Amino acid sequence: MVRGFIQSAFFVAMWGIWSPAGLKADDSPAAATPKSQPIAPTSQARTQLSENAALEKAKPAVGALKKQLVGRLQEAIGKDGAVKAIEVCRTEAGKITAGVSNQTIQVGRTATKLRNPANAPQEWMKPLLEYFERKGGMGNAEPFKIVKLSGDQYGYVEPLYIQPLCMTCHGTKIPADVQAEINKLYPADRAVGYSVGDFRGVAWSIVK
Image 1 (cartoon, one colour):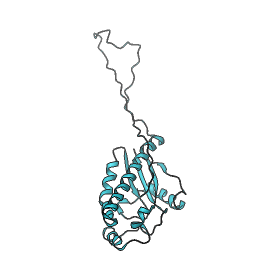
Image 2 (cartoon, rainbow, N blue to C red):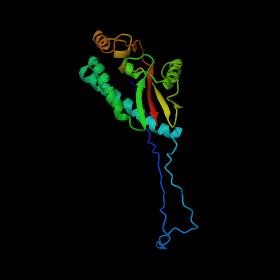
Image 3 (cartoon, rainbow, N blue to C red):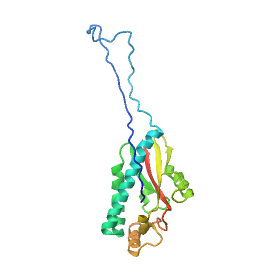
Image 4 (tube, rainbow, N blue to C red):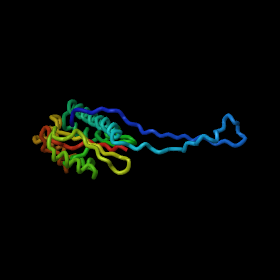
């Protein structure tokens, strides 16, 4: 849906364990631990995730999601037209999302005017959607927002704005065959009536 993708490196939390073994009194003196040497305690504590570390994970993941989705839609529209692209978006967007996500990061898209009910916003996303909606069109708001969630997790969002590519399926003058396909696949669709540059929704990630 949008262009411009932010690339960054991934942060990896480290674990460390050091547990020297004790020796009996008749063990070799050369191998024994001197009595005066303190024994370091065993530690398996996970490094606490910082906001900067979360950003380093979230930005490239959301960028990859956007790039793959837009690329696949452009391919489908160029090869088979907009009607086929609606079906591709319905069947393949979830697979792309699952492919970018892993055990430490989840990604997705959401909006207030939904096409696919499966993309309904989680509670923490709703104030951020409201913020970007108040700001209006492209260029009026920050390029991203990050918030602390429960536990050692962060939520990250990037606003999505309507591009010329989006207008065939989300604009004010939708071709009849495209509208018929939307009505068939998404009878409760609300994601229409946009102009280029309008705020559409957000791409999000949860970093653990």
